[in-house]
Image 1 (cartoon, rainbow, N blue to C red):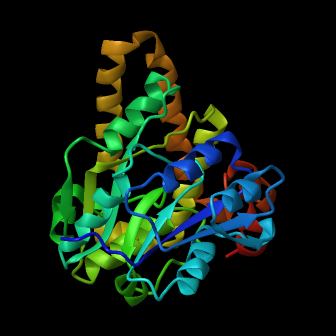
Image 2 (tube, rainbow, N blue to C red):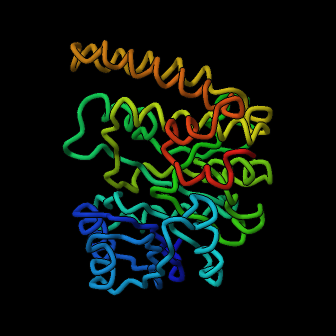
Length: 311
């Protein structure tokens, strides 16, 4: 298959710093170039806008208050809906080689594929806990998933990531697009709906980008609190794809084995982190019983709460 020539690339940005400068340069180094690069900037106070414009990218400014994980991406999709494919990235995902986009888009040779996402490698400065999280979720072997795989994989069947992901535009709109007012994981919601619509998800291990996070213990707590909120608000995900308990247990076993062989002194830290994740997730599932001030404090996406916290 020839790589699609008409595709757009969309990147939400806010204070991207030096990593955004590297990410922007890596986009321009791709052998296959997007016809349109739309950078949605949420009031950056650094040079993020200048970096985008230096690379010839189009910049759409919005207020930080108006940013929404799902709504902002859907707005960008509507502005680019004339393109057959839409690639989404985050400001801190740096394409690993000049053929990364090409490899990702080749997945759409399969007409059943609605979504393709690439392999995220740990950034070079990542510690062992951070590195394992990427190696666990993004293995070296590609995979094609259908709804039937949910019986074996559970919610993992609908796993994907807008940090480096491509959509067949017609299919994205066909399942309703990205959900507005999604606190997190708007990509998983679309992926689950796509599977239920009879489409396939392709994980392309050859399409690589460097992207990982060195979260603090509190940031880890906040992220999993938000996931709990999502699962409380989108209960059909648990009903149709199963609870994440089994995948969590598999992660803990994998992480313990990985650290035992490479950094055994980090095992106690990993166990504490995993306990905090579980507590945070359970708190998120029960967020409606918490005061709004506490929801905001425990959430990574604090902008979600002023208008959505009491829903």
